[in-house]
Length: 505
Ligand code: NAD
Image 1 (cartoon, rainbow, N blue to C red):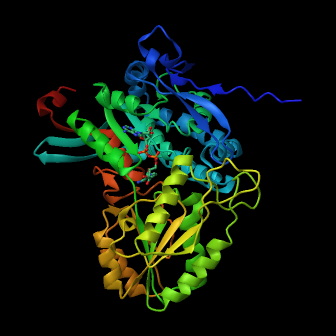
Image 2 (image 1 turned 180 degrees about the vertical axis):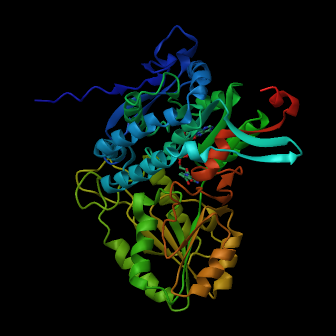
Image 3 (image 1 turned 120 degrees about the vertical axis):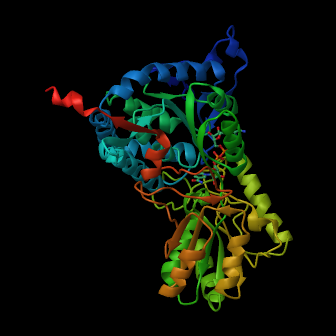
């Protein structure tokens, strides 16, 4: 007997406190030519849902709802504005397994990785609960005789964030909690490849008591993003994704006079000195390069070895990577899941071939991976390329898959020069037991997030998530104090009150 496939969920947008159909569903309205995309489980190929690609009509409805909610939300005392965030923290804790499961099903990372991602999301909610302190301005009496001056922080209005597929749960939390705690109203545009996680999280947000219109969600892709940037009532844009799109959004936002912060792609380097604790370095670098199938903007993708580390590290990392269990992230014992789409798998495998043709030796080849019972999954197993020449196109290409390139450098000077030449500057790490090498590296490495004996230097919520060169466009980063700066306008007030008036009383 054949079993009917479950009906595919048709996703909606969350606007003004309600789940409403995108105009994509109606054939007689302006949005009739809007498209829908399948949301697909990358481990099985199963279609999970259908997501509408909103255009300006949907975006306009969300912006108007957020704009209408702003005056009252802005007047709500900060102490009251953070109460829904305390509720959200509790709801996320209670539902962390459900959220993590959805992340694994639509993104492919393992359940443990998905849960770890949500822990980082929750940290941001916790930090934003400190807004009544963090949002304070400063003042000085008698800047001139009898004249006082103060700096106040005020929210901007409607702000929006556009996020990528690789952290369906966490990245929105670099923005949402800070934006609303500082008194703004917020619109999220999740990645159309992984919209189910935020659908679930917005259902939790509905239970927090936030007034209608304070948080909104629009599903879509480029047309929705363009409409957000172009809408005159949207004051600020936060973006995380690939470098070409980051650069595009940054320039289009600037042209429209918007405040903007855009995090882009990466090509992260780790330098392994011969005095490193090799078992520890191997374990941590393996986790960094192959965790989340290499689809992390902080994943190490080039390891530069110095001296005898060339052999010791090459042998130990090859051994560790070859033992990683690849499969469906929901299964116990699986350490690495698939990449996001069949096109990603094809691109990653193509780039491995390019590396080989341009002189690298394939030490461990993850192409053509076969995972039992998952023939339709997008699996690439851990891959290690040795001796990737400086001239190879791979040296500055973000592969965004489980591929680690090994390069031998003659000295720390040479290795740092290699980093200096990179177009990206998201993260750089050093493994050593030398304090002075560590200090030099910290001082000179040209990247915004630095790891010393750390493989994924992901800053905690109370530090800015930095990024340099083509990995970031803007000046204020996400998280921490930068988030408060980004989401508030500074207003300076200079006051004089004539003495005679107070003598009357
Ligand atoms: P992407 O650039 O394809 O998409 C990101 C977002 O932009 C999505 O919401 C998408 O709908 C939208 N978008 C895509 N094309 C667009 C266009 N032409 N115009 C306007 N909007 C568009 O990125 P992705 O594949 O989802 O994510 C992977 C990339 O994100 C990698 O390059 C990775 O390094 C980067 N990333 C960076 C960081 C960081 O902190 N620097 C963090 C996570 C991911």
